[in-house]
Length: 226
Image (cartoon, rainbow, N blue to C red; front, side, top):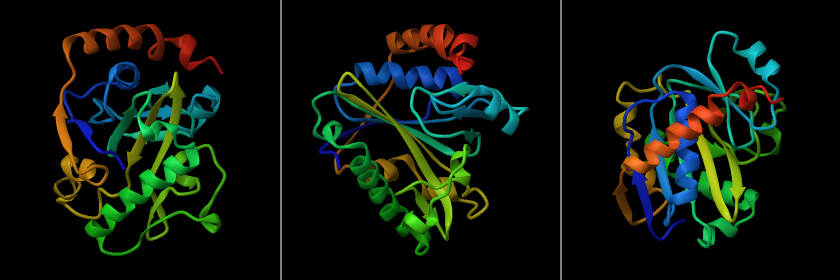
């Protein structure tokens, strides 16, 4: 899918606002397609840019919630493998239509997961689709399913020609004790590109993300704007 892919491995766990801010900072600064895999410092919920906060609080009254820059539905985090793709302006993949990009990306991940679970992995088709505010109870077209259950969903945002994809792979923690070993970050990245280059966040990116986290994703104005 990508000729070359930069990989940022999980670093220190962070809260929802900081994770959203890091994705935004990277989208504006990467020069190559980049995948970032990350951990949460506590369970939380992210919800789509166009969703209403009242709906989120009704569904998840006890969890902190943060509005994403991308669309989509509510996603509970804490036990999932969360990752983002930042694709710079000018890369061929950034010119794909949202539907084609989603199908191509999830198709490659589904083929990789088929080697992990041997059977039952496929993309959602029309008869699987459901309507709902919670992402993992409402499969959309080309979400990844395992034995009929949604295990991967994602949302996109395009900004100044660049593309951000935020995805969550979940519902697998009870299937295998050594699941993380099977779903190693290098294996995930390798499903998307033959050339992987390890990268890390620098101090300036962290500093800018802290500012954006405080000013936007951690603010009442942003999270309660709808």
